[in-house]
Length: 143
Image (cartoon, rainbow, N blue to C red; front, top):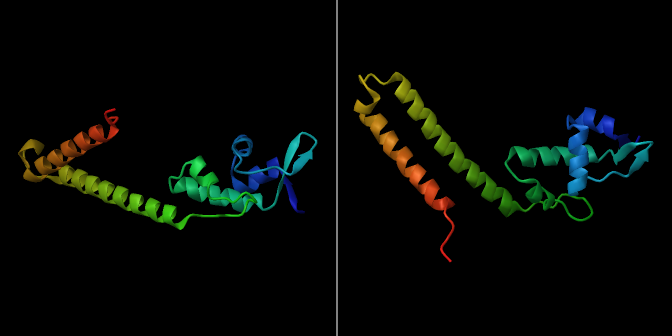
């Protein structure tokens, strides 16, 4: 049993048939034929779908994931791209950890008002500078 119909692929992978058709349209997977009206896929599509799911979970776009496959369908993963994404995730983790710690402090702070708490005010200044930085990064460069 080398070929699976779209229903079986969806059941085994947890990827809805509509997503499988979308992935096929985008060139991420390819059907190998049809049985009646149903698309047939090589059983290897399950591993490919697992790689796509891993890429999506790591925050890669479908276009970036498509580049991770050679024209023959074999994985061709750029290690520098993986390292760059890991570094980006590290930055996000640090930012989220700081936010979590700040929220925990604010929830337990003994100051009568959050605005009287030096730690909360420091967090507030940090949030304001982060918001300013995000706004300036979104601006288009002058022509």
